[in-house]
Length: 187
Image (tube, rainbow, N blue to C red; front, side, top):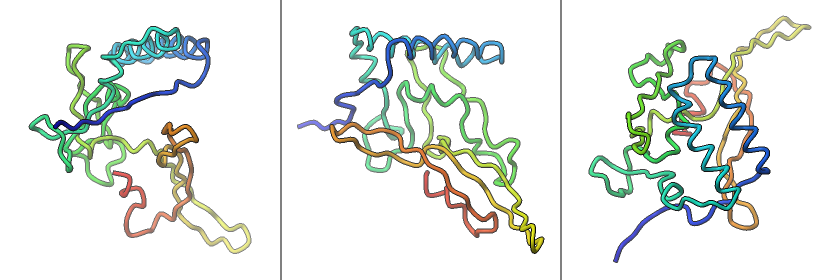
């Protein structure tokens, strides 16, 4: 007997022209010094375009994502993620940063030199996909202030009628003085 995990089927939304436009616009990131990242992303976008054209690279799609431990096997308490999905994380959480050190919260993801190899991204270094912005709310009538954080991004997943899973986007406004960070539960 053997066990495994994976994605049995995918549905690519958008038109072929949408994906070709996305790839073309992604190339424009070169002018921001992101060549080191584009070397990883552009071949993935090419695979999305190929899929739309009916040219399916099954080995590529089987290598999208793995969550495993250091022994390289499935474990109910996995330690890190691998697969080409990790290439979308150009930056990862800086495990050495102070909690309050917002300037150094993320560090550049060091990708292996071979394009066929993928980063081993520890689960606590995967960014949440949620952006935060501090906001000071001032009641104009009473002049009472409240420190808030506006949050937006990917809050979870949902399933459509056909059984396909997709990212669920959302937003939240949270008081800044809460004892624990609401988004710590997303790790």
